[in-house]
Structure formats: structure tokens, C-alpha cells
Length: 236
Image 1 (cartoon, rainbow, N blue to C red):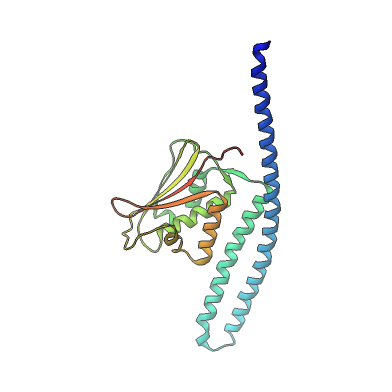
Image 2 (image 1 turned 90 degrees about the vertical axis):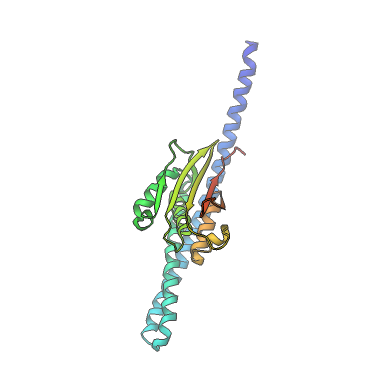
């Protein structure tokens, strides 16, 4: 019986750690729920204001001289783009308020490319041969983040993208290769700068929320490699 005491003590310690981790995660989820509910409310309020801006700009366009029409078109276009991003924020926040799901990156990429045929035509995707560790996040947020990363990597060029996923030691990586001929050095700031201001902010914010890190490096044969890494989540 004495020989079994160390084993019982070890099992008791493991169970205690498991319960403590579960309690921390429950508290974390509760915090996400409160933040998510607040973000949904804010997104709806901002969306209502932007819809008013679009309406007023449309009315003004009927009343002012034609020379002011291009400026009003820009206002309407930017406001419409903002409402689209706010709808995504509301959707993401609503999901997060309910829970914080494990997300299969391969599935998210496959679904995104199925919904974006123009983007899919430029992407050669090679999924990991082995199941990947799941990301901790909101499914729609992961899809939106991948879309923005691919759009930034593609830029205004016609270069094809080679996209791969892989996992090692609990880490998850998304690799995006471009054969684009570069006329100047490229880094993360330059890459994000290829997007509009609002999309740039959305992409950077989503990447931070999902605990990803981004690295850009030139390829020996030309072009660049964009590497996004999610480190294995350690117990705290």
C-alpha cells in the first residue's frame, strides 16, 4: 500500500491543476463574453451613424454642383466599407460572447477559398498532411484574418500565391509564398500597408487577438515568404 501513495499524490496534484486550469478558463470566457457584448452594442451604434452618413451624402449629391460628386462618392464608399467591417466585428464579438471555440485552420482556409473564387484562382493551397492543433479563437475571425493576409500578400500584382499549413511541437504555421518581383525590401508594415486603412487595422487587430506572430522574409529565388505562427498554448 505504501508503494501506491506517490502515485495517488501525483494523481491528486494533476487533478488539482486540471481544476484550477478549468476555473481560469471559465473566468477568461466570462471576460470575453462581457467584452463581446459591449463590442456588439458599439458596432451597432457606429453602423447606424455610418448609415446616416451614407444617406446624407446621397441626398447632398442630388443637390450640389457636379464638381463635388467625386468627393461625395469617396465618403459613401469609405462609409460602406466601414459598415462591412463593423458587421464582421459584430459577428465576431457575438460569437465570442457565447464561447471561445477551437478552430481548424485547414477547414477555415478551405471554406474561405470556396467563398472567394477570385482569390482562390490565385492561390495554390497545400493543406498539412497531418491534423493540425486547433487554434483558440472565433471561426469567422480566423477566416477574416486569412482573407486579409492573402489580400495583402497578393497586393495589386498578378503573382500566384502558394499557401501551406503545418504543425510542429504543438505550434501551428501558415506559410504564404509569393513569386512577386520586389523593387524594394518588404516587411510586415509594408505588407499591411497594401490594404486600405480600415482593413489594415482589422487585420492587425485580428492577428493580435488570435495570438499570432507575423514574419516576412525574401526568398532566394525571388519573391517573399510570409510566415504566421501560433505558438502552443501553455498552461498558466
